[in-house]
Image (cartoon, rainbow, N blue to C red; front, side, top):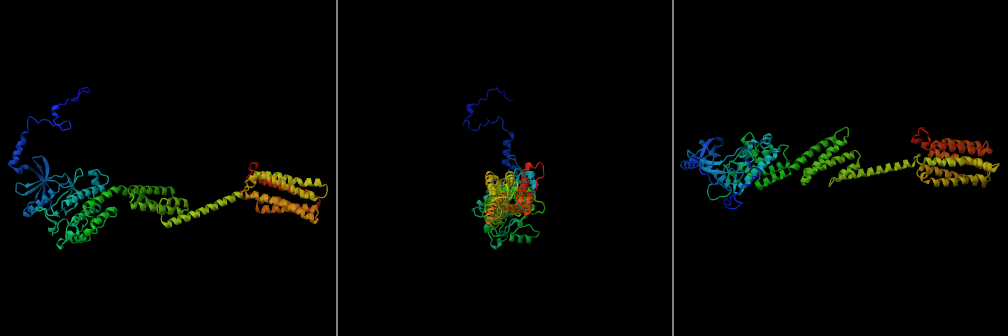
Length: 628
């Protein structure tokens, strides 16, 4: 009955704390003792055979029989091993006792304890053993579903390997006591309900050392075959030829157990005895394709025909199994990454659309898996090779698609890329740099030749210069008040040069930016300088000023013709007008100023129209770039 929350705590009697508060408190003996306890002891003293109450047969072997019994004195279930009736005799009795003596020598958690040796009611020997509530390991070999259901594990292979590791521990302990088992097989390994593992049936075990008791059979005296043929080591068949048993004989049998875990059959399984013997001599079992390479290598080494080539001990086999399990997570990561790599390889080899996103997703997944595996186990060569292959495949893919930058970035992920691949990437990068340089050069050239650049300044330039150029012939005619003179003929170009220089300085940021503007300015200044030179030469030669002014129109027409041919063909009306005006000077020499003014006026109008800013076009369609 629960105490109230406010009830005082119980008090301890100090007289009961004989050895202090850290010692165990024991209750006082009951006033009345069980009446049947002493009677049971008396009965056992009178009739020792009554110590066990038989409850039926558990199983039978070649010579023995195992029965279930209750150990009356302790009230527990035990296993009692006796001889079958047809095997009773001195030889059978001695074999059974030897097994009891060997097993009793090996006090180990993975060896079934021997409780007692005695005689049954008929006088036949019997061994009382711990009863194992479980099944033979052979029951679970190849039954992954059964392992999962019975033991609640996710990885049946790991469960089998840990079972084998416990067998290795038992064998190593036996070897430390000088005992060889000689009959290691899944049927001789019992697995308890909670995963406990026991190595049983030491009936053909032998001792490597003579303890002087004469109870244990010696390996040096073993000259006859013993064990299970489909698991035997080669030396077990050659005892009559002088072969010797050793710890490495059991190591071979451990390799056979590992083989059966991987292949689900004994290593020397064959339909006839002759074929079994040949398989034992060859000791070259065929492994399934999905066997983990590390385990296959360990099994092959353990089952080497020459004992010197096998692992030195069961402990070494166990250590290799533990190393594999420690690395198993990285192995599984590597296997998963390899599956993604196979998908990536198939995608890269597929014809058709280039699904770049999907391929990089697969590459990212396999790369992540390989890197995680290497982080956990830097010596994982499969992961290292897989990562190298994945990166190389993507580098090849990017090179094939002309993306040298992506190929170079991928190549940087490898510590030591293949020299041939590095050379190809470097060559692709050099070609890409050259291509970029060509594109940049073309872009600069395009910008340099773009007639739209500086068109507003150029139009303003044309308005000012064209206006002066158009008005100047009229002004010179008014100044001369008669036939043209060299004073006004030479003065006009000089004024133009001065105005042009000032405007060029004012608009230099825009007018000097592109080749179009620079060439137009060069053509204008060359034309004006040519006019001055033309007048000076004609004056020295005595050519009339009217003729020299007519030549002004011709020089202007020639300059415009060159501009049309090399810079802007839309100025062809101005060039045509200049040549027409020049032709008329021969017919109308007295009207040279008027002809010059008309030609210059048409040039001004043509230039303003062609180079007018886009904002001035009032919705008119802009000409194509090729026409600008």
